[in-house]
Length: 451
Ligand code: ATP
Ligand code: MG
Image 1 (cartoon, rainbow, N blue to C red):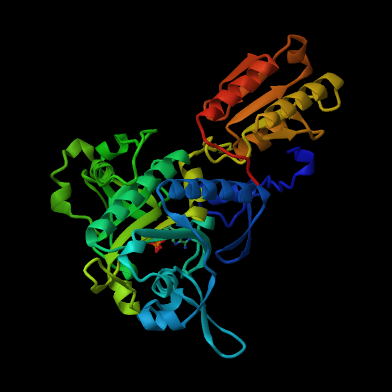
Image 2 (tube, rainbow, N blue to C red; image 1 turned 30 degrees about the vertical axis):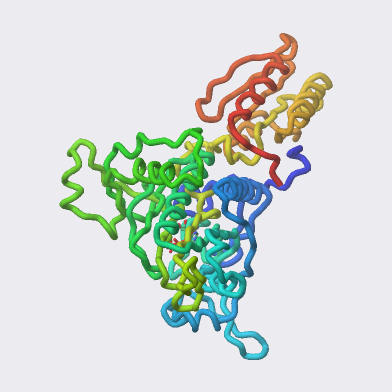
């Protein structure tokens, strides 16, 4: 993409309404624009990152054997009346009536809808196990929408639902989700720690929230610092293996890590004092096993091998896709702007032309642009007639992890400059070597072309 032809409405001034750094940078980098309290338009740069995060979530869900689909945002109230949650959900649910006076709602979640789909089409244990998921906009009429996309009213969420014959099978699905979530967050360059949590209105005894540690997080968390040493890495995992998934769950959840709702001071005090941490975290996902709560309420039964009908065991599993943009920025920025991890960066590399209009500099930039594009990478070429300082400030603000700087002086010696946004370190390389280095960096990150 050439910056002169892109739509990147950056702001010079700090927007006064933004209280936390991620909100500030998302507005300043021209990623979002508020349309109403807690409701945003996603401008091109924000949309690009949103889609990258969404793609990682899709890839990791499908890798775990979960099946993508799409349910609508607007739902009829009937199913919610059947499950009993129409009244329970309270004012967070946006209720609408259509022209015929029928009660409708903008879905805050989809347990009812998916259970109805299941009961309409599945009747036998032979069709199980089954995990269906979608990534769709949700609406919750939050009392205090704030911090930009972090606590929106309209937000983008992956929600998945497993259907199993037995509790054991459903717990395997729970563990499988935990593993796939660990992989997803790591690919986004994030450490998200699974913590024992509270069931809330969805209910259930088994639930973990995934938290990204950040001072601006809304949850208070208590943990053994040893949990921050754990990484999933690129280990191979067989998602069908009960033992392997169970093993990962045990590894990642056996140390003390809890949100304030489930915090137990006496247990916490058993952690060696120098490893006890009290901090704040951003919830970026949650997994639940809730047994037969919805299947009983909505009559989702299957016939078992013994010919008997029984309600299916279910769980639901959510990832806050739009909130993740804020969480990643909270975890990765400096005073100049965002620092995108390679896995989610909107463009793989910036190209800054120090002397736009200089025939040699222009030709060198064009050829870098072509070489990167030819190998499937997306450069953002700042081809505007602007001062170098302004170009650097824009690149730093929007946070591309790598920048190639091209100027007549370097070209005389056959070199360009490759700079890491994270470390600030630069090296001089031939243009070919710079391209090669970028290619090698991204070879370790499964990263496709964005939108
Ligand atoms: P919270 O406690 O933050 O209100 P929740 O526990 O009600 O969230 P879930 O139903 O578990 O949320 O939804 C799954 C994920 O969706 C959450 O882990 C979070 O990342 C995201 N999410 C929930 N509410 C919002 C919101 N208002 N804005 C953006 N993302 C949200
Ligand atoms: Mg939650």
